[in-house]
Length: 310
Image (cartoon, rainbow, N blue to C red; front, side):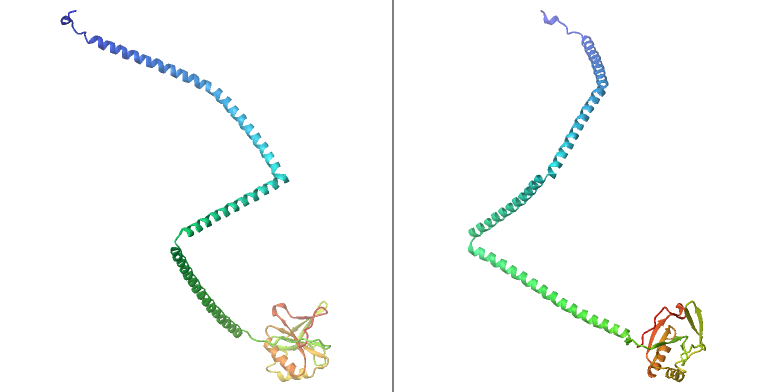
């Protein structure tokens, strides 16, 4: 062949060939995408049935597991309630405690053995220095604790002294705020009660010297089986202004037959004190009982009690 006469092929054919190949590839890709999409749609249509069957299988397995768990729980509960099982469990617990104690003992033995080995291997001089340092530290600690104890003891004693001082101070304040009174000494007697009412700042005997009812200074009213005595304000004996008259009245009473029973209202306590002193000087025994004005007047009847003489 004569190469000098050959001419290179035209490039237009190569361009056409390339374009045909590219177009054919695009068509092939389109066909593949269509096939894959249709297959995926078929798979999605068939999937729900498979999913339901799978769920039913899982549900059946779960129910079987639940039944098995219940049976196992009942079996374990029956075994746990058995006396022999309880005894075995107690033995196992005791065994576990003993094993733990044995393990601790072994660890302590090993630690002690290591300490002994380290002591035997150490230099005696170094060991002595170490022990001296420990002893010095322990002595310092002891002194510190003793100092703290001494300080606490001193603080306790100081607080006790302070407490005693406060108690004395409180006792002094209480003693200053209190008023000592003599308690009356009651005794039995065969004498009759001679009632005297202390009200409105005056003394009102309920009877006269001859033991008749006093209607001059007291108004009497009946209320069933009881008799109500209402002193007339402004009348009666004033122990401060009429001491001689009241003393003469008390001297006229039969001392061997009666004793004075004072009915003392809250507004006449000072007058009662003067009257009882006069009665005592006249040789009369007396008793007394407090009354309040809001409780009403004194009432005498078959039901009640008389104050005992003092």
